[in-house]
Image 1 (cartoon, rainbow, N blue to C red):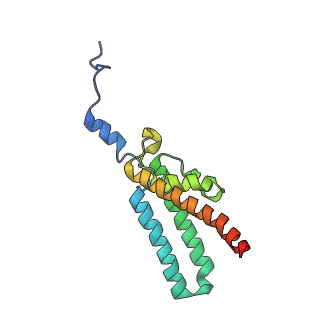
Image 2: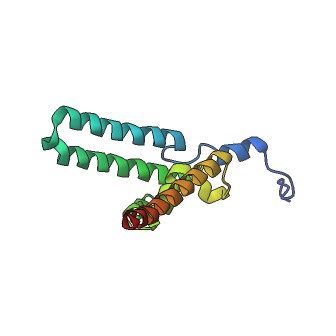
Image 3: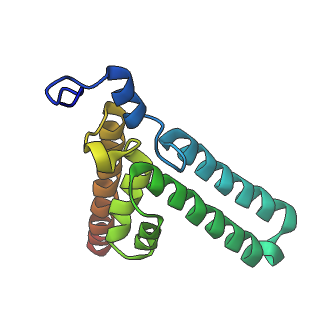
Length: 144
């Protein structure tokens, strides 16, 4: 007879170990910080080098952004290949939201935490404002 009881509750410590810290990649806050840092370095580089270095600086910035997104998507439980979705119109919104807001291991537990809900709300509100501006501004300009 087996010594394991299939009806016994799992060990709480073991459950927490499998939920937190078991995923590759980078977490939400470092992803955001590194992404902002890459953009700041791009603009500082443009200021120091000038327009002649723009193609090289832009290539380095895009490469760093893609690498950060791959690491972040792996952390949410997706394949790093989903980063290609950031170059597809409309799909890029979902992939960006997932990279920016979803918690670690979302593919396994399918639960959004409070920071994720707030970030998604801000992202959607900003998107609605931009769409509204794109629609309203030409109407106001045409009306004179």
